[in-house]
Length: 322
Length: 246
Image 1 (tube, each protein chain N blue to C red):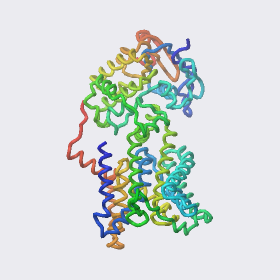
Image 2: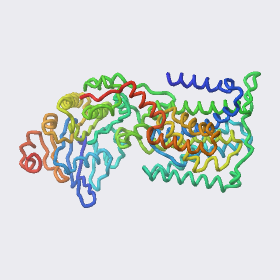
Image 3: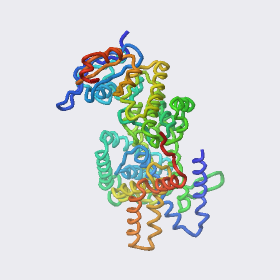
Image 4: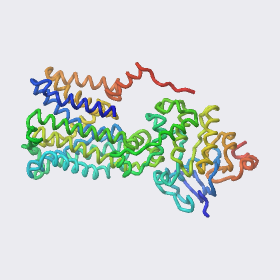
């Protein structure tokens, strides 16, 4: 309940940001861009942070969602919400197909095959011109239609309106993550990560659980892809390529894999910070790279892992007895 | 009436090594059965095959007359099998209480997925009571990985008991456990086995521990059953003395 109240408070503060900083449209844009990364990162966090399965091609599933939403909104005139749900279904279906194959392999073999899945999806995005528009992508994706509540008409197509849409999708993804992590399913996933052999001996059908979380993770990534495509108003291969998949892994690791707030913190640092450092032009990449190296050296469990360690040191920890 | 557990002519080869060479024995009813023998006798391989972690090259395992060899570990767990491991496997990041609650939770996938929307009630009181039987109640909310080895071993065994198994296989539970905790473990097992009406198969090198607990002892040597009888009988068996007890 405490975590839900924290989420409610954080959502309220985040929703009020455009009014708190009315003269900062750039801030709103950067935060929206960050949230487009947060959503797929939440999907990957469930897979990697909680289950211990690292996927190097996860933005491929975001791409499936992004293109599905783009086609449905642009060519069939669907609204944003049904297109988002369809994007999740499409990405989840792709996850089911890919997971059925990849999850039969373990450790680094699994990682390499996920990399291949990402590359295959990227190649399809680039070459299925009749469907995806090829290298040019699908431009001109409409923004969400206005929301009517009684007589009140809330415009969602402008920067602030879309910021709220992105916030709503992010909060929904957070709630899914929160509910999964505290559920028996989440406990089984965490048991698989900590000791797969022991989990199986305790009754967990390891393959079925991994497949279920893979599908869920891909579906959430698909929602992120739909959000990004709608925000940028274009679904392009470069938004969902291998580099973006690696960035997504970096976001999860940076924030703290296996922490619910990890994807949020990781996205803010990974996406927003380079934007803030943009004033330093070329040097910003050096600064950012150095920060990543330092974090990898001194905070292998990410920023939230570092914070937890520091809090334990300050507060003291339970020492083994007997 | 078929035996509760029956192992017949189990054979398992690892390359040129014959780990199990036609091992056979049957246990008719619940109780405590010790499984002893020198290192390399095939005890853990036998456990692994009974629990589905490995498959046998030949031979069968039957539970109440039904063949169970080749079933996956999670299916055997759902039939009522639970086990501990030589290397002590727990959830180190989870609290002791959560280790026990995880062991007893429903693990069918569709029910777990339903639990995302409507979390099931957890028997926290029973888990705390079980921890109390081993004097670990004060560590209920401590990460299990922070405990000493002996305490972690107790958490592992309590977790297996929390699932109320019908067949419990413990692989060297006394290994690395200090005498005080060993006495606690002895008390926990001797109380739980009759209460739960379970069959406890116990691999152990600590002869005092296994002989004081077990009603029957099976001795393995070079992948086969060398002797089978009461603790007194096997301790006086010349073949057992020669091969193992010395």
